[in-house]
Image 1 (cartoon, rainbow, N blue to C red):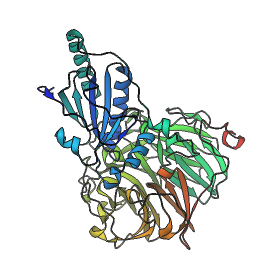
Image 2 (cartoon, helix red, strand yellow):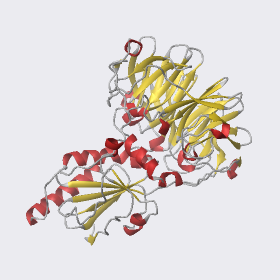
Image 3 (cartoon, one colour):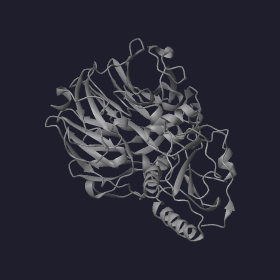
Length: 510
């Protein structure tokens, strides 16, 4: 709570999403209003969305939430990209595009996320920054409702808005695929169909083999046709034992998929988000996790990019124990010994067997993490600055990336999904030299040779000679690159449909 101050009016000449007309505080008089200052790259902002959804549903007759999207990165200033984020994360409240930080400055906001509470008479009476504040917000909302009921200044009336999903339904076979994993041993391609909350298994040439999961949000173990996920992301495979491991990101869990017996089992996480960012450990199913985003198997260890706590974790598969491996939990780019280093929303990992390479998205850098003798962390390339970004090839610290989400090791170099630059780049693991290989930097969907090709926020990569597979997230597609001539093609997956658009085939349900 803070002294009441008249809330600045919202701009009417800005772009608004999830509504067919701009909203004004004057028109919302009589309702409690919460302004959510967010940015769609920010994991902390994403963690706030379920909290807001709970409040919106509970107080729908008296509360209006308005998202104020104030971008961290240049790519996030584009309304079309924010619209895709609104669709991806199922946001149902109006969103104002605040690309020039006008509203941010008017409300003196200093951090993402920040929530500002406005009472039914149009006064700012409270604010809170960070995540995990649902109970505080709910108590404040309840107090405001009670006070204004007594004063007769609250108007109980549900509001409805024209949502972006009503204008642009995602009915494509894939929806926002986050990661992809190619397995040459079994001639299979595993796709995290994140927007459809399921996994898709095809041949390397695109023949549909299996669909794992109902396509409905949930945390359910069981057969392929019973299991449920919530925005699954990175995967790792044990080809010898026919086991696929999955980072079930929004369930804050790790799942184990028995490909031979077609069973899904949760092996780590409680289903609730951890609020503990200090290094700690425990048994898998007793330890809450925080947005695991990618996985890599090294021997009997499962390495985890724990994006929500800005750390690298590991799970000992033989004992079931899970623990922090590197990172003290602060958000930064600090090199050194494991317990002193810091990451900034690590979102992709890969290995050469000796070192773990990390796409450290919020510092737009590639990091290297030692796995064996006297392990330490180094920055391979990138600015190393929080929210420092650009698009520049070069070597080491002169390299500029923009919110890179994917990385894949191929002998002597790394493929990098430079997500917000809509490019695929290659990095020398020894010198840190980075070179653009695919994409012209403009968002789009175009096949062709090298720089002729276009992508839209590519997020995941998997390489097996001679092909590179790319999860082209905002194009709802998997792209296949022939590394011999750098020709890009869109992989068509025969027989695949959106969950609510067709009856599962025998291949997907058997």
